[in-house]
Image 1 (cartoon, rainbow, N blue to C red):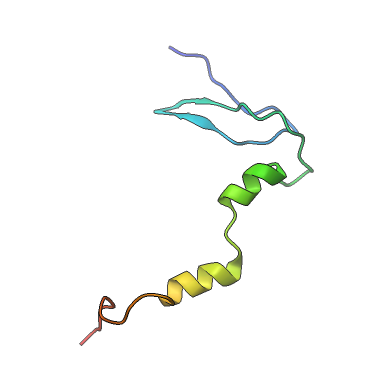
Image 2 (cartoon, rainbow, N blue to C red; image 1 turned 60 degrees about the vertical axis):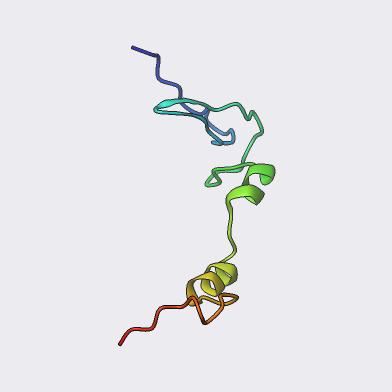
Length: 69
């Protein structure tokens, strides 16, 4: 059995690995209540307005959009 790897308290929780064999290689400090450092947050965070735009199908050609009948 492999040893359990957990993120260090107060550090970025960016995980790498697969199938339960994760490591937390980022040692950047984070504020209380924040999961990722600024660099990793920029990779995973999608602003609410962009999520709404993607959900509404903006930018998708109408020829590909399904229409409920």
